[in-house]
Length: 206
Image (cartoon, rainbow, N blue to C red; front, side, top):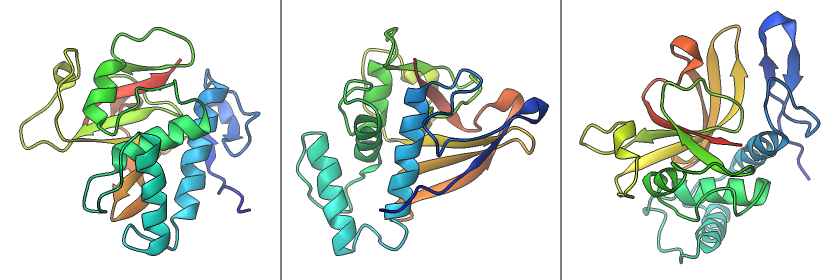
């Protein structure tokens, strides 16, 4: 079994930690958040040499879709939301986030959550932390945090899981599905106050 790739987190005051160990619990990062980030990295490694059109990739997509109670149709159907639910449900708990393959829907359903062990939806001015889900819009129309608020309304969106933060160089490592035809990672420069540029909402597990 492959070991998850280490990603070093650099914190102020010289504190260094790695989320590759479930024992890490620093600066308020819950063990649930660490587990979810670990699972995202594990999935990233498993997609290293495959894509959504390969037999191995299709088999993984079938599992993702089945996990949200839907049948696999084609790799052309956006599957990034199904990936998010897979990571959260398998990495921590199926009850931690709404069972939906649509980012805008599970984000809206998390808006009024206050229970421990569940994702809550926060405004984009929130500083990102490990295990957060960063929601961005894929809609042609401009979208904002106001569009996330109930009642639940579908619009094209995307979600990435924060798996690493470099507080010294001010960038964040995120992992998401349906990116470049696979599960992929990006290193994104952070905005003022360690915010995520272009986000319309931040989801955080309590």
